Amino acid sequence: MESMLNKLKSTVTKVTADVTSAVMGNPVTREFEVGRHIASGGPGLCWRIYNGTKKSTKQEVAVFVFDKKMIDKFLKFEKDQIIDSLKRGVQQLTRLRHPRLLTVQHPLEESRDCLAFCTEPVFASLSNVLGQWDNLPSPVPNDIKEYKLYDVETKYGLLQMSEGLSFLHSGVKMVHGNLCPENIILNKSGAWKIMGFDFSISSNNPSDAELKYTCKEWEPNLPPLCLPNPEYLAPEYILSVSCDSASDMYSLGVIMHAVFNEGKPVIQVNKHDIFKSFSRQLDQLSSMSPALLNKIPEEVREHVKMLLSVSPTVRPDADQMTKIPFLMMSGQ
Image 1 (cartoon, rainbow, N blue to C red):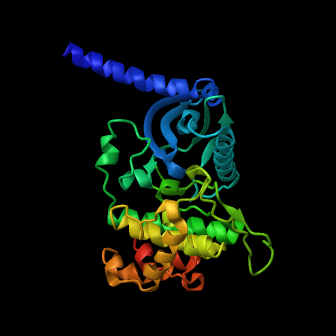
Image 2 (cartoon, one colour):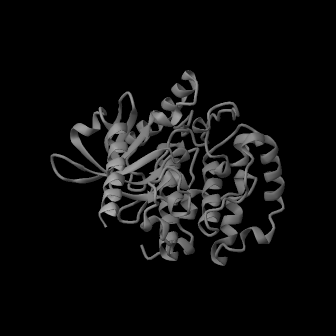
């Protein structure tokens, strides 16, 4: 019994030491108490999520921490690229305010060892819930390991994502550019919230009726954290270096496929040969076999098929998705 207690004590001490060593010296610790490591999220699940409290009010928060040790293997200029990309994502999220976006309670702070910011209380990322456990505490918390998405929760979550995209596309004239389960956060109340604006693109002509967006060419030599998740990326990004709000709708289609298929995206992408992968993907999507969508509920299958169309003009827009009966049956 005593040895078990000692073992437990040393585990707790180690976890506390990990938190303390990464966050120590970061200005967020002046105002916030950092607690247990509970989840991970953001691009490549690179942000560790801790529960925390505001010292002055005892208000509950989530503390997102990016430990710079994670990128030790990269060259200095690559490290700078990664840090700049992550900072941009958080700064963009902090500027945007909407019930369907993750609410930032304290802006990004940087110290020698880490980046950190605080948000509303969080349960986990959708990616964690779908079985991606990178950067989670060990052992994986039971509430994540055993989590099952109920139908009503999935429908409401997808409706919330559609509402969030409608705000970005129509209200802010912005393309998210990396919508995927790691950038969808389930808050403490179970609401789905969007984060991860590292690759968001604002329109060049926001006052015009036909919006234009400038898309960056895919650079395979960049560190993975400086690139969107290719498995959720619309084919036009890669094959014609073009994008618009319909590109986010393709990503929503892949997310819908993933939530009904144990977290699997529609097509596995070979990150080392992205162009060949996407050409093959184009063929598969053009001749979409019924088997590809057989786990998706029948009432929404046709919508998902259209979202995954290789032709952006065929995809429903976010506003149309908020009105489909399947998502509206979520009893909001």
